[in-house]
Amino acid sequence: MHVRLEGRARVLGDDVNTDYIITSARKRETIDERVLKQYLLETLDPAFAASIQSGDIVVAGRNFGCGSAMEVAVTVPLAAGIRAVVARSFARTYYRNAINNGLIPVECDTSVIREGDRLIVDVGSDLTVRDETRGVTIAARALPAHMLRILEAGGLVPYIRAYGGFEVTA
Image (cartoon, rainbow, N blue to C red; front, top):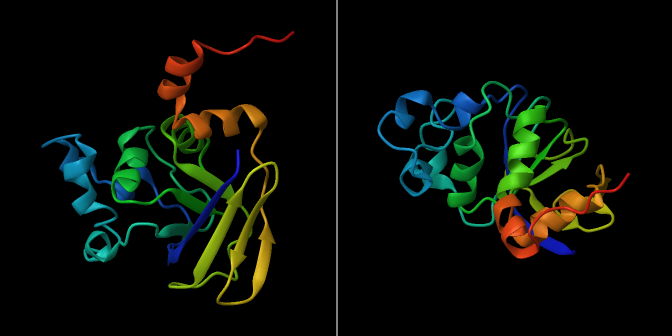
């Protein structure tokens, strides 16, 4: 698998929890991500969702996606046109939910990236983030081959539909 994403950096801080991504109050009405995308990150910035452009790349600090393990916190950014989140670290459940739903989680040092920077994320056997605005390339933690295959299929459910399961190795 090789995917090249290009987009504008949308920078957040540390400890962005799933309730910040999509607040619980909104989920009482619906869990349809096509409706909920208009409320993406409204707790942090009420104008954020309206400012999203398809292809934007969310950039965060440590512990992105902490809090409850709700899948809708992954599907709403995808519905908004965000295909990758670049963060210093992810909450474990968010990371797995991202892979399972086809959102690309990229772990690397994000300290140099600023709001609006032009980013190129190359996903394959190597994983890099190129900040075109600053002229730097940041090495990222590579994704295991099985996760790349799940992402290539579009998530876990499409993978299972296509391949019927996983090969078990001892």
